[in-house]
Length: 389
Image (cartoon, rainbow, N blue to C red; front, top):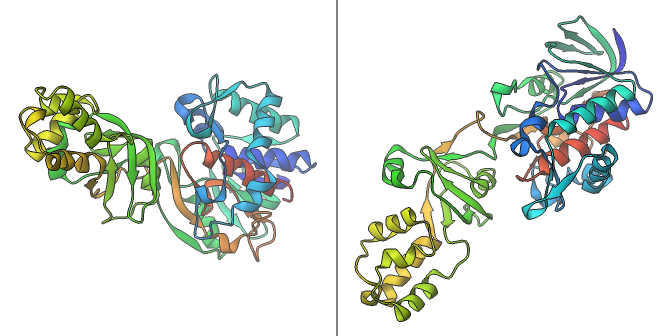
């Protein structure tokens, strides 16, 4: 089979790149080893697809060259994709922090993408294993070799291997001499040492709205969750992209509330109540009990000095804890690192020195924050490659 463009990977970036190339009259084939296209789209956002974010900005993407993403993100913006959603007739709504979700199931987005690909004349092969990519280009597939003038690699990263994620795209990059930035799980729950887990066992399942900050001060104000493995919740997932082994996290478990001030007010108004009872008006009961027991604070509020109240507030607002690792690619939403952006053209996503080869989406060393940023990178980078491949 001969085509103008073969796209390896039928996720968000691959489907979008295929659509855009096909709309230019190119003969396009999109190939994926998975049984169905767009599996990450389907499960994202609790099945509602957090498809973009109103706050797209280059500083909300991690990369060795944070400005690399700027060109694609400016040329195909969140507003452009919102317009695409409206053209598909897919209803959506805004949640917290500028996150946009489908009103209905995420499968609507997958169906719209595959429909647009077919309407533009593109072909989609799923459940088709991909083999070697030979210079020239000939791509070996389970349905036979495909000769193509251009290859767009959109195979994603290593996150969620049970859905078929592999390091295939990285191997293609290395084969053609492109450097890689070391990969690691990102947007992932963090794990604690066994002795720490035993100490925190009473808190498993407790959730608060607070802040998680990593060494250096980068912090995120969202929900935090204590689990039987360690820490999770949006604030932890965000912080995980910046966290490195050996670093401590600083947790504010009171969501910005003035714990010391409120305890002093409660002491003046109702000093006979127990400290734990008063603290439980500001924190979940199990967490309030843990804090007071950990600090050895007992008795009524009236017996507590300002210094003791300050100690309680200091722990609630500045709890330091050092994770030992993460849950890994098994639960990571994305992969940090990937194909080095120094080897790519930021306007076209083309590999420098290898005419006709492109890398888009998660396989590239561009990783967004939680909340629709990685999907926008998929749309924008896929669009950029689709204009020229």
